[in-house]
Image (cartoon, rainbow, N blue to C red):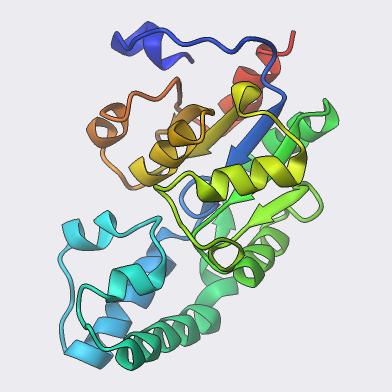
Amino acid sequence: MSAHEHHGLPARAPTGPIDTALFDLDGTLIDSIELIRQSYAHTLRVHRDFEPPLEFWIEGLGRPLRWQFAHFSADAAEIEAMVATYRAYNLAHHDAMIRAFDGAVEAIAQLKARGVKLGIVTSKMHAGALRGLKHCGFEGLFDAVIGADNVDEHKPHPAPVLAALAQLGASAGNAVMVGDSPHDLASGRAAGAFTAAVAWGPFPRERLLATAPDYWLETPPEIAAQFLGTRA
């Protein structure tokens, strides 16, 4: 669904077929939001005897862990300890608590079968992204996986999107960045790509629409329906 048609946004149209689709991972393809929330809450209970309000926790989604925990400490060693606590908890509960969103694997496989170049752009570490992709049935579908440790700048900066495009040998003008957070969409737009907001993540619809996405996807199957349609 074009976001412009339904929300009065200014029209943008690709110069040719969308031939490249980049995806955020958590909250976009993989339902891992409760795992992230619990990992974050556990870390702050351990290090600060404090549990953050929902609004603060959601605001940090899609940003690297060090950026998030820097809100609670200026000490680099303590921030690293918080990151280690988070990752240990997350790893221990990872496989039991995550799954692909219904229809997401099938939609990505359809894009792959039609020759769309596919990449992941995530703020989690590269190895963690690969583990999640494998566990949820996406293994082998993506030719580029850009994690937080693959770039020096992170979403909403354009660097991770540009890195994925370079790895795929793709042009931003015929690429779309698909994500559930404003940081995903800002990164894609700053890199010159089109952007698609997904309705099934934790961010309020109003926050996503405020970024003026080029496409709005209500359900995972629309991933294939929208972008295969642009290749017809």
